[in-house]
Amino acid sequence: MEKFPLTRVGYENLQKELRHLKQTERPGIIKAIEEARKHGDLSENAEYHAAREKQGFIEGRIKELEFKISHAVVIDVAALTGDTVKFGATVKIVDEDTDQEKTFQIIGDEEADITKGKLSISSPLARALIGKKKGDSVEVAAPKGSKYYEILTIEFC
Image (cartoon, rainbow, N blue to C red; front, side, top):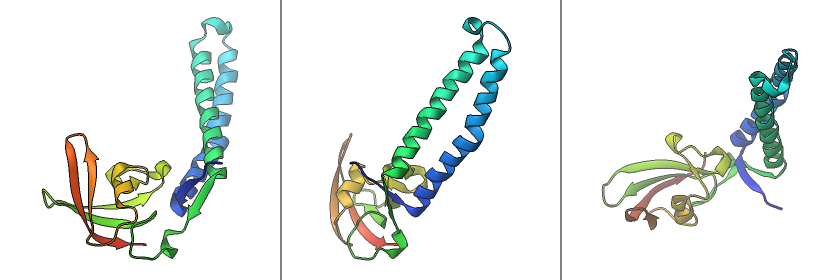
């Protein structure tokens, strides 16, 4: 059975989205379908077909969220410690070619948002960093060739 690592915040965000879909979106789309049915011939009713399509999307997302929540392994990042990079770590790295520094938190796929410094644990960079220590250099295969990074700091917060 597949498990999904999530931070507490990521888990709560999935639950929040699921509640919203079930309590707001689902009832709203049911009303929209009922309203569209009142307009007559369903075979030519664009509103009805659009509402049914949206209902399918909502129901699919609900099933996906329920699956992920039921298979989530919630990891309390604040309770983690250590000197090696692992799930939940906030890692500051420097590009060895450009001296550009970047900071990322390594989290689950569902929570990843590179624009916010949230790096998916399944990304090539995160996979290269896992298990490494401060001062280690890692090589990451990139489309334009290998990139090399040095780990400056590792924090858990």
